[in-house]
Length: 94
Image 1 (tube, rainbow, N blue to C red):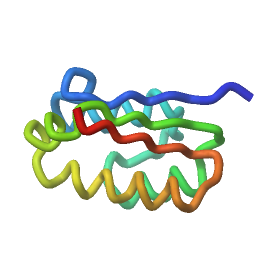
Image 2 (cartoon, rainbow, N blue to C red):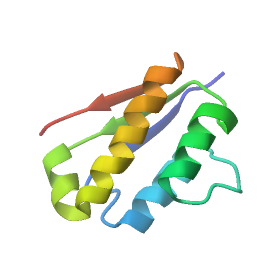
Image 3 (spheres, one colour):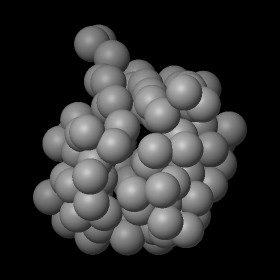
Protein backbone atom coordinates (compact mmCIF):
# COMPACT_ATOMS: atom_id res chain seq x y z
CA UNK A 1 0.00 0.00 0.00
CA UNK A 2 1.24 3.50 -0.86
CA UNK A 3 1.96 5.79 2.05
CA UNK A 4 0.07 9.07 2.21
CA UNK A 5 2.02 12.29 2.82
CA UNK A 6 0.72 15.57 4.20
CA UNK A 7 3.18 18.47 4.38
CA UNK A 8 2.04 21.36 6.56
CA UNK A 9 3.82 24.70 6.35
CA UNK A 10 2.85 28.37 6.39
CA UNK A 11 2.67 28.15 2.59
CA UNK A 12 0.51 25.01 2.37
CA UNK A 13 -1.66 25.90 5.38
CA UNK A 14 -1.90 29.71 5.55
CA UNK A 15 -5.28 29.50 7.32
CA UNK A 16 -7.04 26.98 9.54
CA UNK A 17 -9.44 26.18 6.70
CA UNK A 18 -6.47 25.46 4.43
CA UNK A 19 -4.89 23.26 7.12
CA UNK A 20 -8.08 21.21 7.54
CA UNK A 21 -8.39 20.90 3.76
CA UNK A 22 -4.77 19.74 3.40
CA UNK A 23 -5.18 17.11 6.11
CA UNK A 24 -8.44 15.84 4.59
CA UNK A 25 -7.07 15.75 1.04
CA UNK A 26 -3.57 14.43 1.64
CA UNK A 27 -4.54 11.82 4.24
CA UNK A 28 -7.66 10.79 2.29
CA UNK A 29 -9.88 11.35 5.30
CA UNK A 30 -13.49 10.24 4.83
CA UNK A 31 -16.16 12.59 3.50
CA UNK A 32 -17.75 12.85 6.95
CA UNK A 33 -14.58 14.48 8.38
CA UNK A 34 -15.83 17.52 10.28
CA UNK A 35 -12.74 19.77 10.25
CA UNK A 36 -12.32 19.95 14.01
CA UNK A 37 -10.03 18.34 16.56
CA UNK A 38 -12.47 15.67 17.71
CA UNK A 39 -13.22 14.65 14.13
CA UNK A 40 -9.49 14.61 13.34
CA UNK A 41 -8.85 12.26 16.25
CA UNK A 42 -11.73 9.98 15.24
CA UNK A 43 -10.60 9.83 11.61
CA UNK A 44 -6.91 9.36 12.36
CA UNK A 45 -7.46 6.63 14.92
CA UNK A 46 -10.41 4.86 13.39
CA UNK A 47 -11.25 5.72 9.80
CA UNK A 48 -8.00 6.46 8.00
CA UNK A 49 -6.16 3.68 6.23
CA UNK A 50 -2.42 3.81 6.77
CA UNK A 51 0.40 4.17 6.32
CA UNK A 52 0.64 7.95 6.45
CA UNK A 53 3.16 10.65 7.28
CA UNK A 54 2.51 14.21 8.39
CA UNK A 55 5.45 16.58 8.00
CA UNK A 56 5.23 19.86 9.88
CA UNK A 57 7.65 22.32 8.31
CA UNK A 58 8.47 25.63 10.02
CA UNK A 59 6.70 25.07 13.33
CA UNK A 60 7.30 28.67 14.49
CA UNK A 61 5.84 30.00 11.24
CA UNK A 62 2.72 27.84 11.56
CA UNK A 63 2.27 28.90 15.17
CA UNK A 64 2.64 32.56 14.22
CA UNK A 65 0.15 32.25 11.38
CA UNK A 66 -2.46 29.95 12.95
CA UNK A 67 -2.15 30.79 16.64
CA UNK A 68 -2.99 28.52 19.58
CA UNK A 69 -5.44 26.48 17.51
CA UNK A 70 -2.48 24.99 15.71
CA UNK A 71 -0.91 23.77 18.96
CA UNK A 72 -4.15 21.98 19.82
CA UNK A 73 -4.23 20.35 16.38
CA UNK A 74 -0.57 19.39 16.72
CA UNK A 75 -1.38 17.73 20.06
CA UNK A 76 -4.02 15.60 18.30
CA UNK A 77 -1.53 14.66 15.58
CA UNK A 78 1.07 13.70 18.19
CA UNK A 79 -1.41 11.60 20.18
CA UNK A 80 -2.67 9.84 17.05
CA UNK A 81 0.90 9.09 15.92
CA UNK A 82 1.61 7.61 19.35
CA UNK A 83 -1.53 5.48 19.01
CA UNK A 84 -0.82 4.13 15.51
CA UNK A 85 2.32 2.41 14.30
CA UNK A 86 1.56 3.35 10.70
CA UNK A 87 1.19 7.11 11.30
CA UNK A 88 4.38 9.13 11.45
CA UNK A 89 4.63 12.74 12.56
CA UNK A 90 7.81 14.71 11.87
CA UNK A 91 8.08 18.27 13.17
CA UNK A 92 10.74 20.65 11.87
CA UNK A 93 11.54 23.71 13.94
CA UNK A 94 12.89 25.72 11.02
